[in-house]
Image (cartoon, rainbow, N blue to C red):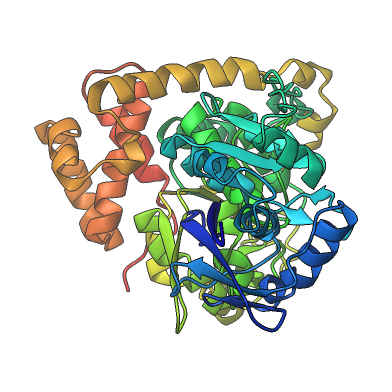
Length: 501
């Protein structure tokens, strides 16, 4: 047979479109051409495939070979098509059974000796292969990613000869039993943080309702320490959420950490990070920090030190939960449903309000420093809290060692989350305006208090709704059916940076 078709998967964001590798062998001067928008690494595959076939003791057809990668308008990149190209050539030249290729999808890079090398971004492809009903053949070194997926038919091979023997029915590759990943316990705990009870309370509320939070305080008061321990309050990810995160990690340069794949991500980029590093980008768009923090936490320390233009790119993802990266030839969507935790000093020197009086920043310097964070971005942060310097007595108090553990706080967080999910099917931070009207109703006295706060603080409609969402979370933690005046008053207290424009 002079025509054969093998199936593989491309890479486009976190999706993996089906690619058909069509090989046609005809008489004529020996040569090999690849069409279908191949990039440099794909065009170079002809040399890798030729050497792999010869070194595996197959015959490389001394005829005219045309390889089409369909669909033709989808850019193809990387060495992930090597295995499928080699198998299609063997099938077209009659060296292996072409019928078995219809039931398989093949992904893998070939070495010159015929060994299979791992490829990046295999997990999104494996998820779509499972839905197609075909069997996936991939490098054995990628098998740990595939085994995260239930109900998938997949085999891992070490060499091209193993794949050919499997397809010809000579020696089947046996599927490994699924290995469950071992989860490593957290090394940090809230009980290590002495004092700062108000900040701990605010973080508990933020964890329960998925609210964004900004901590303001002098250097060394524990803002970063609190943020690092915040993920210990969050419940484990569902299997679907964990697979979404693993798919993003698979296409990035980070890879998948099997010991933490069911835990919420925690990302803490340096303040010198560019906009592309934060939201993603590049000629071939790759996920940024906000996508790597999907279903997890993005911690921005020293918030005013970030470039203002970099911070502004966060505004849309904070609302929509996704980021769209547009290029001249393609548009790629990445999920970005993250929880923002940020920290900053109260002034350039960091000691504004310190009883020692060592802050000499002028009001203009303080205003200029805080103005690095735009009003629209600040408006999207649900809670603003102060993290003051703690006294020597608190630091030296040995009883502080017995502060509440993360496990104890996490139990309350879990109960509050379950109450919200049972009531509305989502977290309080994701309530729609119609759901806010339904589930965040206030009595007459509370409504009057919120009206006064809105007028005095000059709150925007967005800030008004976020106060109601935070109040709903506080009521859930207290297991109140309705929002009480106490719940609302506490929520208003977490909007201290709001001011009239």
